[in-house]
Amino acid sequence: MRVLSAHRRRNAQSRAFLTTAHLLHLMAAVLHQDRDLLDLAIQHYESALLLEPERPDVLRNLGLAFAATGETDRARVTYERAFAHTPSDPVLLKNMGELRYRMRDTQGAAELYRAAIRQDACLVSASFGLGTVLQAQGHVEEAQQVLRRAAACPSASSETAYHVGLALSNRG
Image (tube, rainbow, N blue to C red; front, side, top):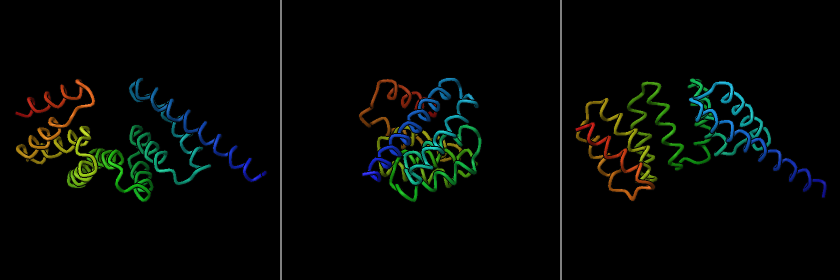
């Protein structure tokens, strides 16, 4: 009975750290990547991981927070830990692609964006990322094809459809 009670208490603590981390991370994003809030979010994600060390969702979000603070090596290592558990998570693959692009690894970024799109053909943010990489590599026609496929997806919102159309018109 004590083991069960301790387990429940640890789960409740983990949820509390994770919820607080999410809220801090969201507030930091709204406030244009406020460094103090990001640092607090990182502390709470790390506290949640002390209680549940290999949760891929927490690892992915911690990687996002590290990337937002410019700590690209820590973000990469954290994403790789998450990838070991969820190699087919399209959002994780897209996040890893964004990090690779930021690190000027366009080939690696393109591969990760493509992998994300293979998992979720309508993950528009991955299509935008791939389109950007392809454009930077001089593959304009392929970039336009990627964006056209994204535009054909049933959009989650009219804003998404607008941004896909805007990206297509800006790229010719």
